[in-house]
Length: 145
Image 1 (cartoon, rainbow, N blue to C red):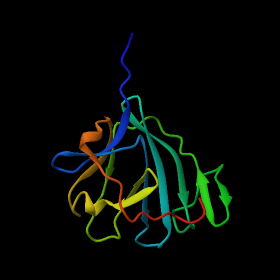
Image 2 (cartoon, rainbow, N blue to C red):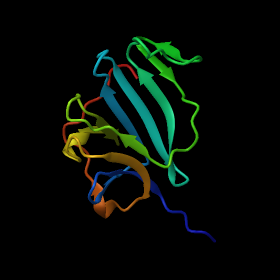
Image 3 (cartoon, one colour):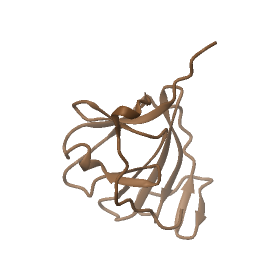
């Protein structure tokens, strides 16, 4: 009989791992040039992350949604054709608006976990709720999912 370990999403930022207490996380940000909102949903699976859906609030130069994308209201939805990702590296620049991470119905600014200009990666990690980052107390949603 094999023991199945639950997977969560973790943030690695130069120091200890910050565990987000959920296997699914949404990464969101605003494009610094076009000002359009972007979201990507990741799920921890088989020791890696799978990008299961992406959304763009509006298109701009070089930011057209791929073939097969569907428009729901003002949001373009699509499923990227990518393999499992061992990690997702984030620019985490202090010059842009920054990223938000959402899980369990709550969101927190990445800068609350890792200061800007510090390399950051999202990875799959075995869950250990004793070390998990608590959900943000003042979560906010994105209109029209």
